[in-house]
Every structure is written in structure tokens, then in C-alpha cells.
Image (tube, rainbow, N blue to C red):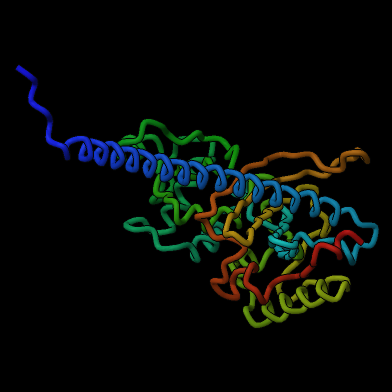
Length: 327
């Protein structure tokens, strides 16, 4: 017997099935390629933003060593803006002796500082001050509302205070009661590099000065405005008002922190934080003490939360376009 013939339309249906499968495979492949292309482009743009942020550090080094001191970039928390063809860089410089040294500041200064801290849920700021003092002192005696080994153990932590000076700002994250919000607020104001119990007021940023006790807000505000204007006009900074306190023996700081943040036209961004120490080597005038990529989730130099933050638009010390720097 002859085999039965398959329906005439079967071959057509089979071809349509195969074509449909091929179309689905092609579509899936195209989608996968688009995703991979987007990932590669994002990596490329992020790397480019990082390179541009690094160039901001290099520019800051050059501007710190200009022969004309009135043209040098200031290390008082000033922010400098640089525009390129397809990106913007903002660079902030801060002398470390213009910050509050968490290893040297006394309880009164730390208490005044933390009076401005964000609210810590269930943990008053005064408790954080005591916990910091307990972390850095040499004994196991607990400050009032502080924390030594027992309190860390009761909190379920597997470590205890070092009873030694802080070796890095990041170590503050380990202090009992410290959270990410408070640390993000504290980090720009604090240092381990000053080695001084007091702040060099002439080098202090607006945030640090407003955190210090007994500084008249009106007089301080006038001084900050004059200081900004003098920098914008390439004039020497005004003397610090003696009514507010002694500015410090010298305005120069051997250690400077630099934050450089780049924002590209496509939205890619990168931020670098470097701590540099001056060197006697003419070929290499700076020595790197710390260099890291900062999280863009923290306050950035492109946010404008208000006049209390020196990165606000009104507090840009200088605005450059790329050809200006080439000259």
C-alpha cells in the first residue's frame, strides 16, 4: 500500500513555525546585544567620568602651587567649577587643620559639633560623643552614656573599642550608635590628620565654623561673604575677626583633602576623594595619604541643599572654562 500523503498545508505550517522560532531567536539575540552594548557603553562612560574626575585632582595640584598666592586655589572649603566641552568638574579643597580632629578635640568641642548632627533614632547625640571618647581613650572606664566592651557585647557586636586613637575616619562607623546618615554628615567636618585640639579658623569651612560654639552667626556670615568675594576677585583673604576667636598661627596647612567630582552630559558621574601632604620634593610636591572613589549617594558637589553647604551655586569660588586653564 502507498503511504498516506501528509496534508498539503502541513509543510507550510512547519515553515511558519520554523520562521516564528527564528524570529523569536533573532529578537532575543538583538535584545541581548542591545543590553550588552548598553552595559559596555555605561562602563565606558563611567571610566571616562572617573578619568575626568582624576584630572580635577591634577588641576587642583597645579593651582595650589601657583607662584601668585592670590591666584592659588584656597583650602577653606572653597569649590571650583570647570566646564569642558561635554562635562563639568567641581573641585573642593579643605585644609585638614581647618577640620575637627576626632582624636584631639575635647568633649566640649565634640558636643558642640554633634549638637548639629542629624537625629539618631533612639540614641541622643551626646551618647555618640561619649562613645567616641570611650573608643579613643586608653582605659576601660566608661563615660556617662558612653560605651565600652560590655555595651558592645550587649548590642550583639563581636568587637570592642580599640582604646586607641582612630586610625581612619571610616573607623567611626564602628562606634556604637553611629549610623550611615550621621557618618555622611560628619565625615566632611572631621579629620585624623590635624593633630590639633583646636581648629584653624581661617582654614575652616562654613560648615565647621557654624558647628563651633560661641561664634556670632551674623559676624560669621559677614566674614564668610567677604572671604568668598575676595577669592572671586583674586584678592587676599580678609583677616579672621578677632571677636570670633584666634584664627591659628598659620593659614598654611601641610595636609589638604581634595574632592573632585565630574558630571558628563550623558549623566555619567564620578567622585574622587584624595588627601595630600605637601612634600619638599620639587619634582613631586605632594604625597598621597588617601585616595578613594567616593559614593555618589552621599551629598555631592552638584547638589544645592542651601546656603549652609558650600557647594551651593552661590558659593562657587571660581568658574573656569577649559581654555582658561590652558592659558
